[in-house]
Image (cartoon, rainbow, N blue to C red; front, side, top):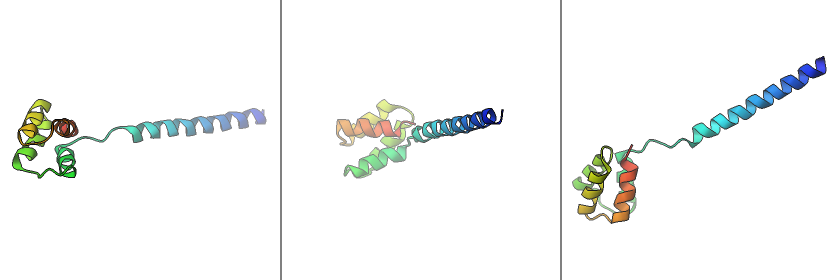
Length: 91
């Protein structure tokens, strides 16, 4: 009987450890919240000056992606950079 209790207790501890690892992995893998600041940082990292139009474009990205994209494109941002930046702004 003692042997059975030890096996059960050991299995239970292993189960808890495994569950904690799985939950910890899921929590750690959840994406961070994107913000207009991420959009601005992305543009700055690619050499774009942060003009009022670009700052406003990133702010639009938090509400509507097409306004963000259009504003950034009109300010001289390349199409693929505008797409990526607006995706970063969309929270």
